[in-house]
Image (cartoon, rainbow, N blue to C red; front, side):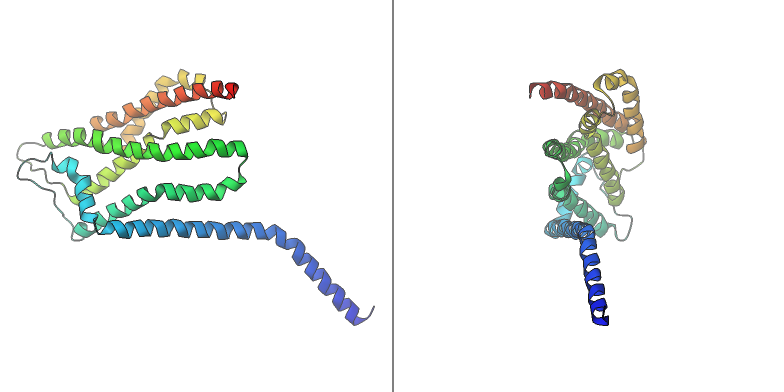
Length: 262
């Protein structure tokens, strides 16, 4: 074999090795590129919503602080104790609002990324679970704003000792309500979590029902950890969590019957 033939054979072997190795790496690279593109889309949508809302940042803060401001004693008002608080508090709230509003689009992008790897029956199950998770999270935040905040702040503003003026810092108030929004949003996901555990075979409906007392205790412990250190707000979170757990059990009981009918 001549030198030219040896060089040609070596080149063909190299091309063959590259061809066989490419299919193994191409899917991973394609997935990473797709993931990057979807993350960029998420960030751009959040940024676009944030820019649109930023012009109304102060109005948004006034809306969120209304449950407290309406109940504050006459002659008192909210205050800013830090130099940058008048700007940073509305800025932080607007960014949070942008993420919350963009959440359906964010989860849609996540769904578009993982859906091709799911079986058909998993797709039929996953989509309603994702949709219900979004709606329940929004419902938890709405419940906190319209039902919990008025009761909570009515108690706090009247519980101040005599001679103490109730003038809450705007940044401290924002941190407080965002924590409650997050806590109630997560708490309202309990029916979804319950159904997923039953469907995955982690537990059964009968076992969950038998441990109801432990679940109620866990709800109050969770309420203690996620809410401010007062029994009032803890109860306002623990009781809905327990009721949502019962709702999850009810839905889980109906699933086998529906499967048998189908």
